[in-house]
Amino acid sequence: MSERSDAPDDPRQCSDAPDDPRQCSDAPDDPRQSGDAPGDPWPSVELLYSWLESNPVHDGRELLLLRLLKLQEEVGEVAEAVIGVTGSNPRKGTTHTWDDVRAELCDVIITAMVALRTLAPDARAVLAAHLAGVAERSLGARRG
Image (cartoon, rainbow, N blue to C red; front, side, top):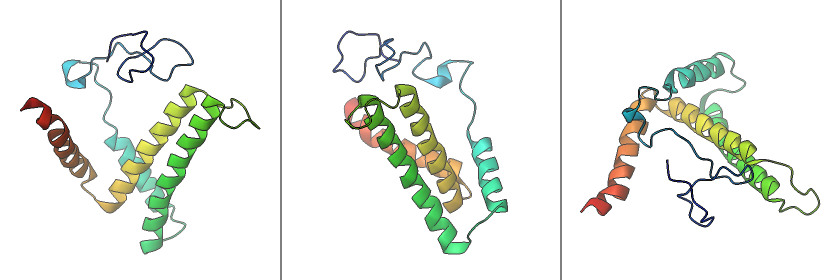
């Protein structure tokens, strides 16, 4: 994780201030460097996917489209939380915290993982391959 800084405009820095979204962590930047790496999310994603599949409200193409639309709903909740934490709606004022924003971002990630699993039984491999490609395109240019 980045070092603590008093430079509020640098998004790579973190802060211990409760109203600052850039929370600090003592966790290593690379979880492979620690024996305390976070748990694998894919077993839980598979359980959520199986639960949804065993309790269908819709089926076929409609189920797939609605699962993808759910992702947009979750992204909207991130926007709502950011508006709430910044007090950007003068009628409502400050209604959320940065913890709310982080929780909504987690919901986006979980929903996206379940949606990916809906489209690809090998979702773990699909994500890993795509992430490797994005990292190579983004970080590979910096290396050479």
